[in-house]
Image 1 (cartoon, rainbow, N blue to C red):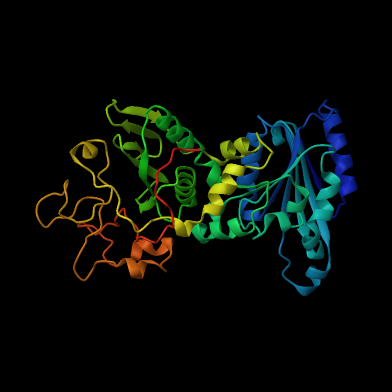
Image 2: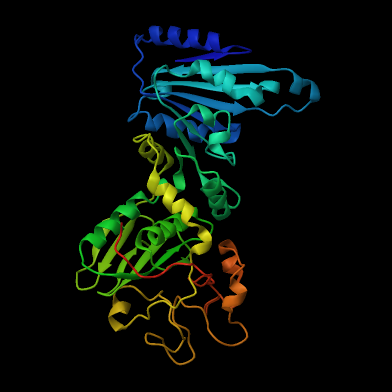
Length: 401
């Protein structure tokens, strides 16, 4: 059931909600939280669809705040609030109110949202796009216990992680972190199966994907070992290679759906690691409303501390069979290379005028690594390796915390 209200108020919207619930025969309110979605008209449909799908697991009142841009000076001085009230099948298992703000009221959205919040229920604010630099300092973010952003939708996703670390407040989280939950679970389970000391890690994924950086920072923070971030054509995360004193542990996902877990001395295993849609990510975030300390620790580790300048373990014949062809070696003529003069697959060409010096790489951002000179393989495709920058890690490889 849908009800359209033009030039309305929060009081009239509340009355319309009560009337709509009675009309469909459900006068009682059985919702567990209020989800506030701050978006624009272009992304409102996709965000609302994801919220409705997530409401099957978490019945909620969803408030969609759409700030409309007024084109003329006169329109900017005239405030207006339009609303669309949805209950029943049109709103999943909860209630939905789409709020369109015009004029000066755009700068005071919290005054419109506050009377519509469910009493004695937690509040979650989600910015699918254009999240503020300081979510907790935003007037709408200040109303919430949890604030959800998505750095993947920003123009410079990796650099956005630095801004998120600078303004982090307990209760902040990001969907780029939620996307790597299955990877973190699988890697932790793999380390539980063997007794070993992790010496170095390589995380491989597509460029400008903050989930790859977050996974690399989490591994570096928890294992206290050098972690290298390598590039691939995707989709998303494609591989994690852990070099241990007992042999390599490799989790490789080439197709975005099915991954292969390889552990030295054990048969390869196929594991499901499909890329999840936004509805599944939001549903996961709504399961816990307490601060995520693990995310905070990984975020504060810092992107600039990835890609250490220390050499990575050189793969031997056994390591090649376990899928570690992308691990770094000091020279192009090391074990595992092809015919003389041909670079090893996944390794940058070393030596000669095209070699990238460590000194030149110190100030280079991670996002620009794909354009670095000498970072192309024999077929002209981007190499899987990034330019090294100092990490400051001790590299003692202590066990995961």
